[in-house]
Image (tube, rainbow, N blue to C red; front, side, top):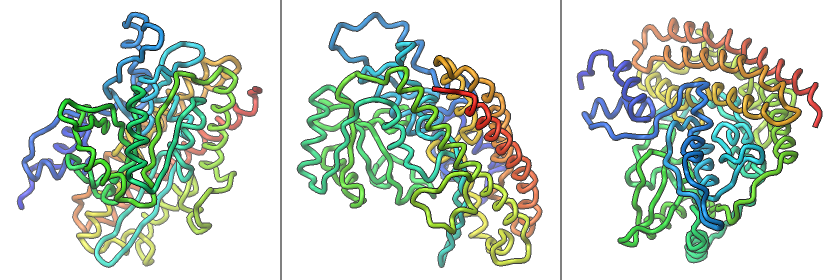
Length: 428
């Protein structure tokens, strides 16, 4: 199939308009599919990425006692899971202990662990997949978010589809959005990217439609309808998930001291993982060189290696493997789940700024400019990766990518080290 001129540029522009991943946007252009409005990522470091609900909340009249706020639309979402839980907690009436505003996406993302790095290449008989994760990893992102939010969350698991439906109904009958974990490939409206085929994803069930179908928030900016049977099948497709669900039964949120303590714990974990000073949880030892700032340097070495079987030039000598691997890199860096604008560093800067508003944590704001600068470097790196590179030019392309990765590792190390130094001066 002949490709349009400037395909990469057209795909990037479509991503901005629709919120699609690079791979989905590129495929849609080639298939001549019309655009569908979606939740658009906020620019890296934009204050809107963490505070998009504040103006809407301020403009509402005070709600009668016991009445829940409306479920907010997803707007300016940077990180999918933090954005989803921002909306769910907002609808449940959970508020920041100082401002009275909803817990922002940026705050929740930071509490979840915020940022990290892992690079790993998976090679099988037909394809090579390059995984590049820039969010907190390998710690459980959503579990940490819920625990550190200081909110009472009712989590339930069961191997029984009948009980799972009863648990879901109980949350909906209480007037609360219920988050369920499903197979992404089982959502009939979803464009499945390379990284999504067997991935679980959390969606919020908001209630029942007139026709008996369930109303689903999948973060796209458009609410979807799904029959109860189809949702049950999507929940049970990945057996290990055991029909997991969670909802917020009350509007109680964290007090100031709990929130401060959890913020400091989250930052300590994040910096320890990036700098390699803490143990990796639930990862085999041989993954250690691929994680954190050490992982960035390992990746740069693989990119420059033109002679060994472990170098990217040798691993990706076949045109099909080359295109697939670079497609997955770009998708991971832009998908809003495992990566996002600015490697999620701009969102982390917003987190540090918001955290600094708590008494005793003022100095955290000194570190946010470092992460905004790093966010720019991540954007430059993402923009230069070209899945359509001529295979004969791959070594030069990989060397150019390494030229970006190496100073990025230095900037990441400097930013994390300074954050550790500031953290040491803060007492609870």
